[in-house]
Length: 336
Image 1 (cartoon, rainbow, N blue to C red):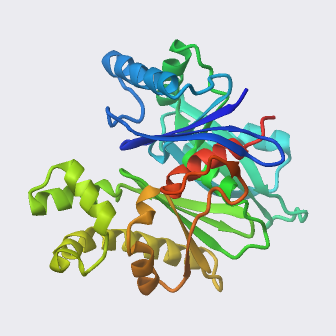
Image 2 (cartoon, one colour; image 1 turned 30 degrees about the horizontal axis):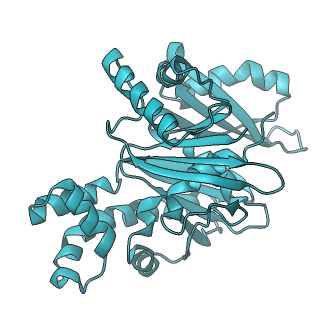
């Protein structure tokens, strides 16, 4: 038996088949187009098409269905770190629903909520606060995705938000510096901060790399496949195409830089006297030629590319390693 981790994005579907133990052993990595550009089906027709796509993926690559782990896109998740007076576990369980109503923009009748105590101070005076992480999703969305897999005879063992899989894959501790994780996808840009080994906050926006592809296609009269090849092959290399490609890409890339700068500023407001020491890039688009160098020029922080296979062995892909950060985090999760 092996574990199959699936990260379904709007542009591609990533999968890793692996065995776990003292060290993860990769058996196979898969990166195929999402022909439907769907994350979660919303009606019967989409569900039928989505089911066929997943069935073909599992069959074509002979992926083991005994332990399938799924990522959930941040677009269907709401995360919030809140501070509340110091409570016992029983008191918190009673109060958490009311707390969620204040912070989570999902109707109560469609709310699926989990929570985790991040910090509980020993001091129980009136001013002491405990930090609690709320993770909420629309139950209807999750049920639709789950139903697709159940219809194929697959019961997912884990369904987890992408950013928490990435944080796990990084194996950050309280000894690590304040870190901003930038996960770049085709449709979304997710920015999460981990400080003192604890999740701090997350921002998500629609500044995905597909906007760059669309802009290239429109400016140069290319189809989307050709535009994607331009973006991948040339990136922010000003020597290519007389610098015209960079001129087209920079306005959208600068939107990403602005979002990162906002996150850095917000952290410094939340924690006076503290600053983000480093930025770790994740996701396939982060590998775009020249992007990390350009980002380093725009922000005052160390820029690193994530190394998702640092502790793995086996069939490690030679290219596109950042595509698999979410899958690696799913593989590393221990089942309770």
